[in-house]
Image 1 (cartoon, rainbow, N blue to C red):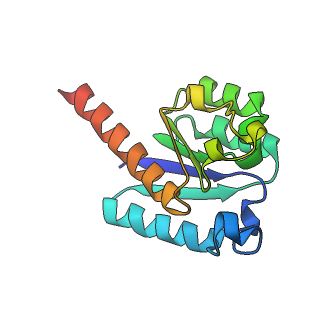
Image 2 (cartoon, rainbow, N blue to C red):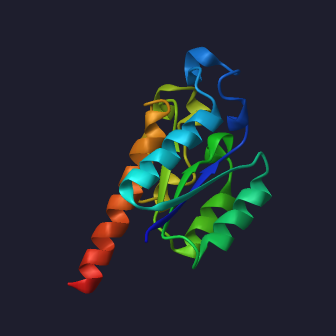
Length: 152
């Protein structure tokens, strides 16, 4: 069975309250519930975690090695600052999909640079909560294709 780890970075616990014109009114809990429904429909295991702490996110990425087949991460503000998250993703060699609710490439200049994009298998941004669903679907598809190549 495919196992996907979804990580939510800082301030995403404030979804539904903060900057609704930018991020919408959907809460993190409702996004996680939708992802769990998707996982069940796809026959995969999904675990979702949130932290405002960079170090905790790094630890979870490191612990994912051998436990998960792929990571979907919204690093939030750490997208633009965290070499530590980038290095953690490199170290575990798990396919990682970077997701963002807003289109970071249409935002302030400092938000347009991602330290993770270069080590992720892909980046999805600008589709609100749908970005997460697309990211999980991409991770599942990637793992399924990789497993198909291994058995073929």
